[in-house]
Length: 350
Image 1: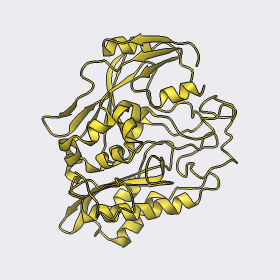
Image 2 (image 1 turned 90 degrees about the vertical axis):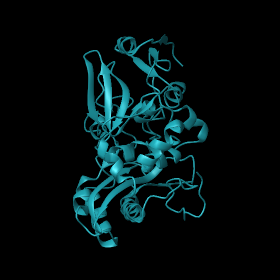
Image 3 (image 1 turned 90 degrees about the horizontal axis):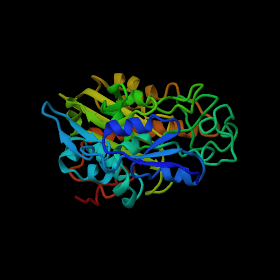
């Protein structure tokens, strides 16, 4: 690793000031950042340790409804918070399907939002990568593209975003609360991550020094708790990133879908909100016909970025499966294989 300065911030304002310097990076659990540093993929000149900042490790129910989750809340603490899991079961299911228990015990909410792509060309310093070295090119183009994007990609970058957690959060209209030199601001999580376009090195809307302090779920997000699921197709049942994932949430009214929320993971460089599919579902009778129509709408603009056309059909089938399970109702207890499309529900744990 290269040499770097280490700053342990005592307040959010102090952290923001320290991180505004060129080459600075925030350090919490470091479950992604330290790997990138060890591999020489990223070389920060200053690490700003925010792990001891007060008040950022809380899960709070808001007076008017909804919840606020601090940036330093651990993934496992959020998944096993009984009140939170009841209100947003798909979020808990996504959390428990990601990484190992050891990593979930360390990883933080903000770190999950900020984790970088797992594209193997990005992780290989010998490969050309516009995200790592703007203007260098993209060796993934024409390379091994099985796990790469089918939505929103550009000639400069075909990588995907790896988060499980972000997918149901985007579906439920989560909002990111950000602190910076100019004060605080809020950004919808759907708009927080950027598509690659001509500048794939810019991954989020954060400006230099800005820091995630919390994430807020709105009051009406909990209205979908009774019909909400997250499913993930992966190369092995555990400890693997999604080839494709989907989060669906329905509000049923008089035998029809009063409102729907749908988002996809593993298909783009950001969690993908399928608003066209939601429009198809609104007012429809739940069933295979409406779910297939929604899947077609969600993937109408999808196109392979190489040898990965199978992901489009896989995503289409996963959407139908996820909507079907959501319509059937949220399980009373978490499945023993969270987010598995193959779990039959016979083995449960509290």
